[in-house]
Image 1 (cartoon, rainbow, N blue to C red):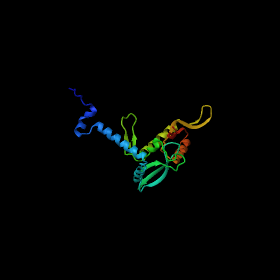
Image 2 (tube, one colour; image 1 turned 120 degrees about the vertical axis):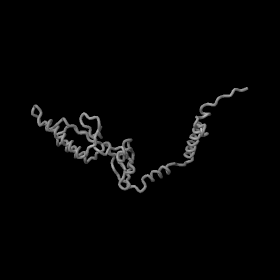
Image 3 (cartoon, helix red, strand yellow; image 1 turned 90 degrees about the horizontal axis):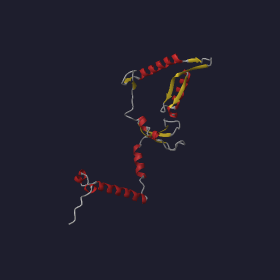
Image 4 (cartoon, one colour; image 1 turned 90 degrees about the vertical axis):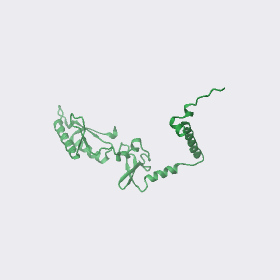
Length: 208
């Protein structure tokens, strides 16, 4: 008499698959069949590109295309921002740009989240010296506070001349670090202001 051989885990299936009548092995077979079907369609010359193009068209249908520049680094890749009623609905590379020809790096490709992101802070966060938590402050308060501390530090550390009499007219106690999401016009004005204050250490995050 032949001894019975217990079914393997795959053949028996998990408790959940046993109750539903659909095992992991069935799933693998179905997945393989779907992949084979897609491969066969490709071999027969059937392209899925029209479906992909149609999906993209629906996303930006009735949207206004606005040429722009990626804000992140100094390369200056071209972008197209699609807007509906003034709201950004999509950002992608601009194929007409001679810089990137429609391609974007991972940061540039994710720039939509820079403009539309529910996690983005919309208030000034301030943590007082010695405090263990952040407080919401108004933008007017923050601007006045920054101006106050900048003037105080400059007045206390400004050097007109070096010990040997060389003209300096600078302060090395303030460092300026610009953001990569600031446009070129603002960066130019910011740089002029910093140099006018005698600040020597001026850098932009786009170059780091």
